Image 1 (cartoon, one colour):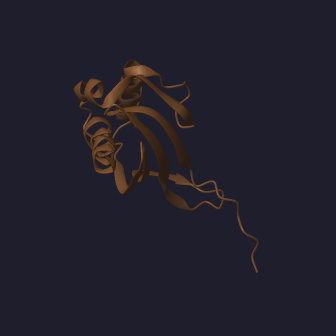
Image 2 (cartoon, one colour):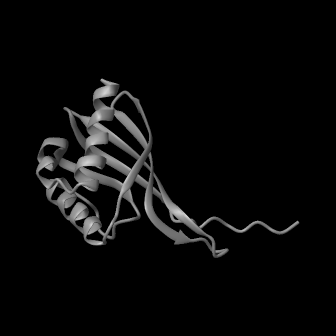
Length: 129
């Protein structure tokens, strides 16, 4: 089951978000889907229509691409460690690639819930020694 759940999540990122294959959303996303926590999108993402809007918005911003760095699955959850081709500036002025950790809950072979944690590079500066 864990490998099947990882494949659902992998397909969502690679085929839906990266390639824009919106027709796969009905296959991969439960009609009752909800982002439980997502600071990266200004309105709650709910259902397949919400996911379509999210993907359309992300893809309209240009060359957005998610890189799957790691997928870890246990039970009905898959943790994805992701990076993007986008960069942001830290408070110190350094440019860093955006990093994300997302936890997806799979039910009946579809994405049902997701928690999204985005590292915008806003780490506190350390005092110089």
